[in-house]
Image 1 (spheres, rainbow, N blue to C red):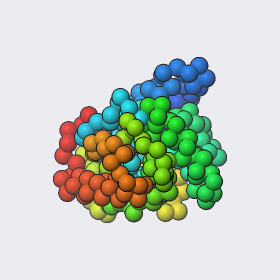
Image 2: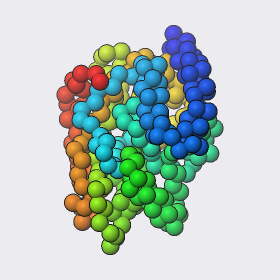
Image 3: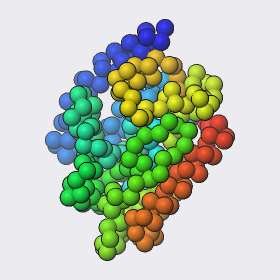
Length: 266
């Protein structure tokens, strides 16, 4: 039955997605405001298709550019967080070469970064800053990797330089918000410590085989706690911002897991 469910979900996903890709490309080419907002609508539909119920505490500041600093559990995080608000992502350079996935990432205006090249990081940091100044909401998976869903990996600081460069100018109206993401239930039943790694995609797991297994599992509940907006100028440097974000996300994830994701679905 799991294989049948995975096949049905995947087939429906492609039937739904493929005709919409040229539409998003048109929005991008014409500079339409829908280039930002259309992916948000699209990912909400994908969540329904996959069977993900969203539980959202808080909201993203809509009137200004926001750096959204999140933990990272699974490839499914992209759809879940994109369903929360109109966002783009900072992604590792390898994603730009992945079949099909790269097309979706580019259509959502992702920023691809080769973290092994310092000059590349600096150039992309400037691009992220320009996007924030233009009012975009940019998601940074600050762990630099994904976890097993039971905790938060220590945050890495280099890309925080995009918004807190050493000796840089004041950030003005730009702010940061934290996103604490956990998967709390499967088929309406709480996921325990041993169950959460079934959802997580981490280590050297193969993407295709993990996606097939996950899509066959059944309905999931995803809980997202959004921290309050904090002006970037409140932080002395990128390390201070990283420390604040890591502590906030870690504490929020721990609280969600203690409470078992009791928030009502959004």
